[in-house]
Amino acid sequence: MKTALHFTQPLCLIWLLLGLWLLRLFWNRRCSSLWMPALSWLLLTVVSCTPIASILLANLEDQIPKVQFKQLPAADAILCLGGGVEPSLSEPMGFHLKIGADRLSTALTLAAAGKAPLLILGGGGYPHEGRMFSEADAVRDYLAVHVHLKIQLHSIGACSDTHDEALKVAALMKQSGLKRLLLVTSASHMPRAVATFSKAGVLVIPVPCNYLSSLNHLGDLHWLHWPSYHGFEIFAFWMHEIIGHYVYLWRGWI
Image (cartoon, rainbow, N blue to C red; front, side):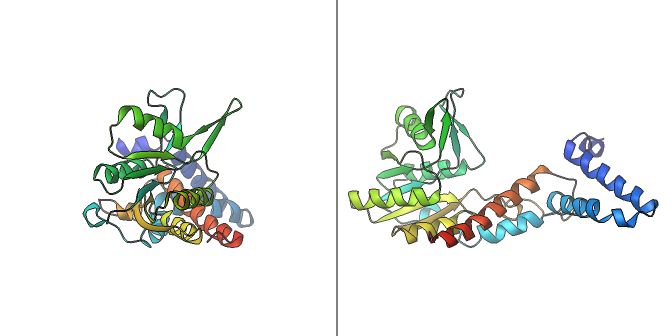
């Protein structure tokens, strides 16, 4: 019964129908027409039915060593890069948690542990009806009213990308006399983030979190399973970082 339920999902149905189409072409000896659907079915299978995407992402996540809160030194500030929330006019909190919300929870845990006297919030901008809503502003406003932290909060406003965040933070540190930051972001994004901030002249102590690869989760690794959307999501994160690395390299940002 549980196996049959898998085929109520669109992705499983597409995988099955594409496979049946391949078998029909092969049965009718239409080999010249096989290569395109065969390539599509193979790509779909590799990404959604195997841990290949997780293995690729884990190679990025493991470039920066994992940390324990107790082992982290004190710093002048904690910097939480954006990507964990998005502003919302519907949510009671004023923002919606996304897949990268571990960034915010990790930064708040560091703040609660007294690792720094200042929490700097980064993030993107979301245009809506002629107005730009800032992820960092939404989080700052919520924390200032509802969470009583013994730490100063600072939003760097809407940023276009990690490079923009690095430039704004570098200017803030120079103005305020700050020396080093605890940098919080997703483990897969951390190598590019560290390189970007170093290029901007900011000394950071990396605090990777938000491990998305199944290799960095509890549980056994299954080499073959039913098609899952998770594989596409993981592959997209890996591809984003690979392309982002070369774009930043080309622009001289790392």
